[in-house]
Every structure is written in structure tokens, then in C-alpha cells.
Amino acid sequence: MTKQQDIKKVQRTLVGVVVSDKMDKTIVVKVERTYVHPRLRKVVRTDKTYKVHDEESVARVGDSVEICEGRPVSKTKYMYLRRVLSSPSAAVEPHLA
Image (tube, rainbow, N blue to C red):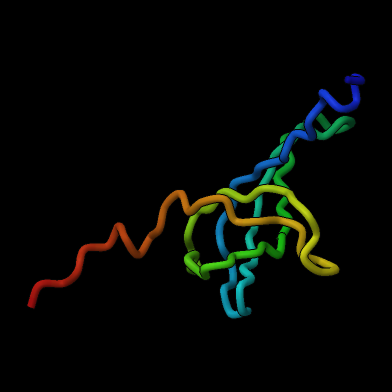
């Protein structure tokens, strides 16, 4: 075996918050990252939105989710939903009447 066959591609995983779930089998996830600006030496916070493939449509708006990179599904959708980390709707207790 050659060295290229032994090396597996590492999947990039990100954690973000669901912004929209209005599309069929697709959610929009906002991922926020911070870094130190090279010249100003200040901490800069940026965010990016990804269209994520959600086969079972389990994620809802406000959920914290883990997504991973994979094979492109469409022109703009190349991330897949790995799991739902936390849901704000599950944390709210039902009102007792």
C-alpha cells in the first residue's frame, strides 16, 4: 500500500445554531468563530452561515447542532447534520394548568 491510500481525509466538524428550518431536508446553521487580527491584535468575531442537509428534519430553529463536511448535495449544500447538541424547546417545562 502506498502512503496516499493509508491516509484518510479528516472530516471538518463545526458547532453552530440553527437559524432557519423552512426548507425541505435543509437547515441553515450559523457558525461563529473568533480569531486575533494579525495587525490590530484585537479579537475579532465573525460568523458564517452554512446550508446543511438534514435528512429526517429533526433540527429546529434555535437548536445547537454539530455539522460535518461531506460530499456535495447541491451547488451550495456540502455540510451534513451529525447530531443535535441541545434544544431550547426541550429545556422549557410545559405549563401546568
